[in-house]
View 1 (spheres, helix red, strand yellow):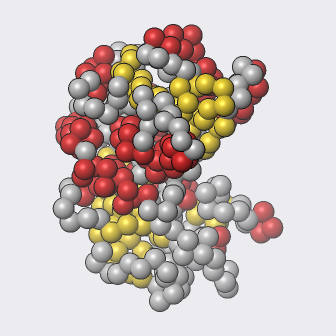
View 2 (spheres, helix red, strand yellow; view 1 turned 120 degrees about the vertical axis):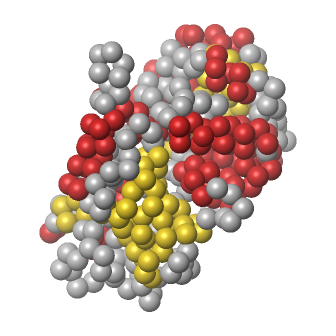
Length: 371
């Protein structure tokens, strides 16, 4: 441990850099202590699989793609391993984001409030960017060509961490995929329900509607009582996945980074909309999202690629009177709700199962810019 005589439920005692008076929370720390020795309220997890967040993996993949389009997977793997070993956590220094993991509870501190027991197989619901993490196998089973990273190592959860025991009726990796983005549908449900409680039936557009967070957001909007639902996807292949699924009333193909083209596409689908949900893993979607949102509407930025300065200044420049929300990834009950959507909606489940099969085989189902 760091030598501190006290521990913090927020994990401050695990911060190695910066130290002294400049000590900060694990999320913004430069380096964390990965000692397997637990504070009284901590939990140690034996790691099985890391799931890199979409924005982080896209950045790493693009960085290590050669001029012919070949992805140098070994270089991706080497950089991820270097980040973990250097920082004591998986936090992409460019995107600032991490991902989450599946593992088995190995030890529980006597004062842990998380309700976990040794032997529980769990998914962590806090970012790897703040989770002390050590890898013991050099990621030798990972080829660097997917977000899914088989790994052996250990991770530490704090007293204020969040984890969920994996359900027994679903493939654990399918559950991980859902839990990785479970904050999005929960927040969309809350936003849409707020409109419905005022007697409104809001129109909703989801940028990246065929992706993980996007498809769940569409399902949540429908369940919460949204009116017209518009899914925006970057390529026709993803549009084909959504047409006929019932998740969206309109599916449009447009680049979410191109403001005029996106505005025209959504206008052609009956826009602007009351609620826009940004679920893409590329930068540059801040102002286009504002352009398709009606005055007095709401934009939910649920992407780690978002520049919130660009969003705020863009709203000012466009004279956009909208409420802008940051999707922070946590709402009470978010994991159970997302799994409920998966179980209850065959279209959502089919999209996730196709994506999981593609990840395992390094395919490209619904990965063209969608989280």
